Structure formats: C-alpha cells, structure tokens
Length: 506
Ligand SMILES: [Zn+2]
Image (cartoon, rainbow, N blue to C red; front, top):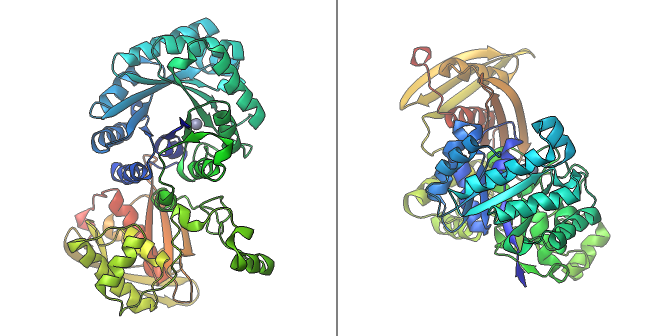
C-alpha cells in the first residue's frame, strides 16, 4: 500500500478564518497534540502576515520534533525570506509557496499574463529552494484554471525543485468526479510528476470538501491537506477526521496507509474546539456529540442486540471513552489518576495534587463527576500561572433591571475588591471587572452552555473580547454556577492577553 501524507493546516487555513489570532502558547498546545495524533506535516502559519504569526511558526519549528513544519508564503522574495527565517530551527522545514493560476486570479488579482505567472512561479520555487530542500508549490485556484496551462506550471515548478505540488479547489466549486479527473489529468500529463508528491486541498462551499479530497486520493494524490473539525475559510476546509475515518473504515476503496493514531481524534477535536472557541455541531460526522447516539427505539434495540446493526465506527476507536462510571468526592486521588489516564491524560506529582484539589471542589458542588467534567477540569485554565484570579464574587439584584456585583480579584499577587452596577447580573459582573482591570476591549460575544448532565451540570461560559487593534480573544470558564463561569471566562480572556492592569484603577 502506498503512503498517504497527512498535511494539517488547522493553524494556517483554519486559524486565518477565525477572526481571532491564537497566541503562541495556544498554537503550541495544538501543535503538540497534532504530533501525538501522527500528522506528517503541520502548516504552522503564514510568517510574513504578522509578527505574531512569525513568532508562532518560529516557536513551533523549534519545539515540535518528528514532524515537518511548513510555512506559507506568496511567490515574493520577502515572504520567502521571512518564512525561511521562521523555519530555521525546524528539524524538517518546508516552504509552501505559490501563485494563482486561474484566469480570474492572474488577471484580476495579480495583474499578470500566463507567461509572467509561470515565470514568477518558477522564480519563487527556486528562491525557496536556496533555503530548504522541501518546497511545496501551490497552484492557487487550480480547479478553475486552464488544465493545459496548469500542467505546464506544475511541470516547471517540479523542474525548479518543487517536491510537493498542491492542486487546490480554492473556492470549493468542484464536483468529486471532476476533481478526481483533474488530479488524474495532472498525473498523466505532467512529464516529471514522479519527482513530486501530488497534494489535494479542498474547500467545503458546496459541502463536498471531503468527497473531493477523497476523489483526488483515489486518482493518485498522496498528500491531503486538512483541518481539525474542518475549520477554515468560509464554509471550511477539508475535515481531518472525515477523511481519515473514511479511509480507515473503507480501506478497500483507497489502497493507501497513513500514520494517524485514530484514538487521538476525539481528544484533538475537543482541544481545537476549546482553544479556538469554535463549537463542534452535534451532528458533525465522526466527532459530533450525537455521532454515536441512537435515539429511536428501533435503532436502540438493534444496537443492543448487535452494535453493527446501526454503527459503522465504534466510538472508542476514535477515543470517545465508553466507561460511564462517575467519580465522587470519596473517589480518592488514585481513582482520579486512573480515570484521567484512561482519558489520555498523564498527571503526576504536583500537577496531580493541583488537579485533585480542583476535582474535590467540583465534586463537592455536583456530587457526581463525569468524564465530560474531567475534560473540562483538565482544560480549565484556572489555577495555572495567571496574573489574575477570581477570589470571590457576590451579586445582588433589585427590581428587574439592575444588579450590583461585588468582586474580589487577585491581580499580580495582590487582592482588590470593587463593585459596580449593570442591567443584569452578568453585565454588572463584567462592568466591575472592567473597572478593576482597566479593560477597554469590547465584549463581542458571550455564550453559556451546559457541558454535563443533570441539574448540577457544569456550565461553560465563552467570552469573546475585541481589542482596539482588531484582535479577538476567546476566554472560557467553567463552574456549576453559571454566573461564576461567566466571571472566570471573562478573566480568562483578560489573562490570556497578558493584559497590563492599570494599578491606579485597582
Ligand atoms: Zn485553503
């Protein structure tokens, strides 16, 4: 069986669609999980696009081992220079450069004729090649290009040294059979195609990204570009978990193998959702909360008799834990450690003590602690090094409209208490925190949901703060008290940005 390379672009195509910039720490956390998951290439960012992106690519290149780290560039020297510098410490660096090849891209976007486009493509590959051996060339909007011209560009790019050639359906316009035919056409007509790996990159505008990518693989592509949970520009990129599990479940149809540890899929999906603040829809294939539940009586009956009647994938295959025993305040450190290990978390020593303390606090307030609670507990930023912590809070309401919040925060090791009003408890709370911290970012979005079952369910609050310079920061907070969860989420967003607190306010 031939090897299919999995190219993850969650941190580039995915991130650029979020309207938020993930910080280096967040990108690194996702990066480590992608390595654990077994992806071959991580596209870590577009270094020339911002100093933050440059810093992230540089850090991931230095820290992540056993994986190729890739940076995106346009076909211009300064992008490639910056990218090469960002990748300097990578074990296996790759520069991903390219240019638009469809008539609309060449004429309208670049103002170039086909000859000039070809020239610039060749120049960019050669230029990148001076820095790294592994150069991927993308022919942007390839699906809407003239196939004869595409073949010529690809052939010249390979001649110039490209090791991978990416044939994207940039706008998500292709039908699966057409996309398969295009890949087939490239493979049959590019004379030096044996010197490069063909890559597919599809978008989901018509809901066909997965189908198109798979059609490309069937036609002979040996690299697929994907994102976790399918996040990406507009309707999204190709969903990692769908492609990988389609190939896993229907091995007979593709004749390719890969290095993915499928039991890490569920954990990766949750991590990316938590860090990006993009929820996974319940009905999402493979990783949706509903993907393995059988609601109708007939289906339930069938599954109880034999799971295969209605189940094509066992949830535990992708790491959805099946054991639904719950822990309580009497469960002891050992039981907690054991359960966390089953869920994929290794905790020892001080970290275990810290988690156990928070576990007891949670168990006191909700009696039964389920796996979902433990995920939240492990992802809960409170207690980690943060320059701002919630000490206590109280809300009083008078009449229907007004509320007063009294909040005590520990800011950089010192305690401060203040109070403010608002039209409702959450508004009063946020106003108070703003006053104490001097925060002037706008609250752009605020959502609450229950993450576990029962009346003592754990609530998850998500807060999105928009800063003056356009950055959007996501904060999350968890508590059995939704007001407290909201306060924690707000503070988490502030802490993430290393908000400089104006002491005079406090
Ligand atoms: Zn894309």
